[in-house]
Length: 412
Image (tube, rainbow, N blue to C red; front, side):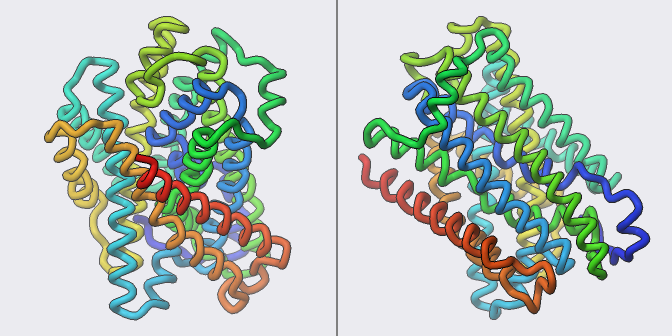
């Protein structure tokens, strides 16, 4: 990862580029783990859960901006700040849970990419997972050799492919405008809709996206050492986060609307393969092909970003810098082992999302405490309204993830 640079007023006032770090972090919100939940929500309940997607996206934007702000103002990543404040045993224990979260994240993303290759080319899942790992190594090698900006450009390109792949079906059969408006009214229809909404909303804020955004913003903009520099960079960052998370939200909403308009009553949409088959039956093989390409781009982009996040976590908490390619190889092993053992990929995706839920409080609560610390954040410390909003978001997201874990374990 690039070394941190000090940013003076002259440098900060010359060409702080808007687009970049937030678009990389936003990949976490359109990874393969989100696809089945969004499609299932639309297929089962039509437009009922539109409000869940909108609410989740607003919360994600607030959280991601706080992470980016932390990196820019302090010049340190969230894992680095935690590593400096925790004792040796606590720091290592924190790293263990964060590392498990990183492995679970990579598991979902590699499996999603492998499923896409199976749908596109009938490639066996193990071989597909290996191909996803190799391609992601090439993407990370680009970052190592040419720096962060070319890597960001590649990820933005993949995000565009993801958007086209998941939204193309809406052009063939657009959703009902009245249904979309009615879906903005918060409500449920039975226990199952509550569980599905909890999985969609509670699993939106991904731990690795919180950790990595502080590093991405810091590595791109450096450490702003003066108040005017910080104000200028943070203004640009708000645009970056707003645009990136807005696009991610549109993609997620588009998946739900696609299912609501075309897949209601279809069977098997709780798996990616089943959803793909239902899309082919409802909209034709061409749209199904584009959908599978979008899924592949999602797997490739998200697993690359996940490896970047894992390296950030390890460097900050263990004070050791591991080469990204070595990191990529090590975290690929569990996913390939599961695929090679013939484990049901959809079941593995579900388990990985539950594991991710355990890591939410460990990322969100420290972020809230650190950005509320005036000694650390100076004039950019959160004001009372922001503290209240963040507190509500943290309470809501953590509660929903706890409920999701409980319902997943005890629902049979």
